[in-house]
Length: 228
Image (cartoon, rainbow, N blue to C red; front, side, top):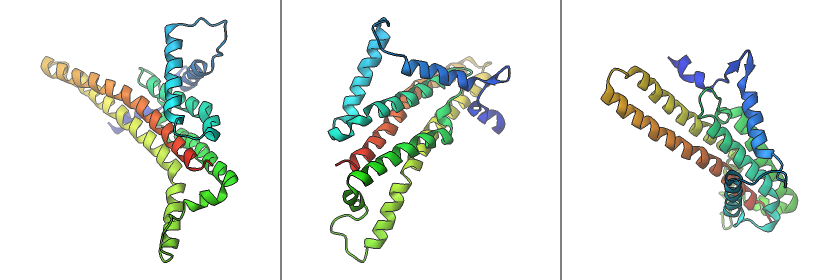
């Protein structure tokens, strides 16, 4: 039972070739297709453009102009996570954002970039975050250690949060789908379980966007903390 339960988090294969590569190529083409006059503007592209502009204003409005150069990177990260989350809900696909290794590979460079930017542009201000103003000298060593640990575990928190939420949602949908298969003889229970399944699917669609937004928003907060 446990093996079949977690098989949904293994990349499916077709003729010995992992379908994860095709999914990554599809998402990359969706994100990085050039925007020029040869392309026909349709409702989908206009909706995506409006969505990106709105999210950029929402995330970068409280950030100083020196941090606006991160807009392209963070918006690309948001769309990458969101599209991967959505794609993972399709049948016979694989959710790469349910893997902690990928999420840590995104979180660590982004977090490290904010730390390096703060250390190079304003080292005294960055070090001041380790010791709040007005702290008694007897508590200063303990607070410095606590603040240092809290900063170091930030990328781990980013990766684990995304992995746990995506994994929990997929496991719940998988369990409800198994219940649907076993309740085919009872129509009332089947209808009730199917209704729960649809509600969970809608909830997971919302979670797919919320988790991508939270990931990027937290990185933007780390960035704002290290800006001049």
